[in-house]
Image (cartoon, rainbow, N blue to C red; front, side, top):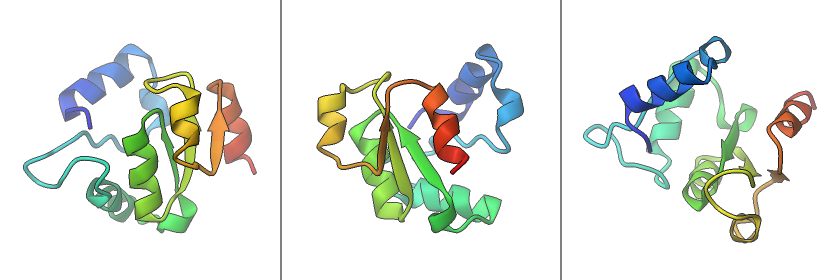
Length: 108
C-alpha cells in the first residue's frame, strides 16, 4: 500500500533492485488498496503468473487477507509491522521470524 516512488526508493536504499522483476506501488486512483486483492491480480497478470504459483509475503493483516482473497499461498513475517500473535490469528500458510527463512520456503 506504499506509493510507487516511495517503494522504489526503499528498494534502492536496501540494494534489493536486482531481486525484483517488477515493482508496482499503490495506485489508489486505479485500483483499491489492500486488503482488496485487485492490485495483486494486476501484478500476477502483468507477470503472467497464476495465483497458485505465487506467494504473498507480508507483515500486516491486510497483506495476509489480500493474499488469501487473491488465492495465493501466504507467509506472515513476524519481524515487521505486526506482532506474531496478531498475524497468527489470520491463519497464514507459513510464519517466519527471519528473512533467511523465506529462502527455505521458496526452494520447496
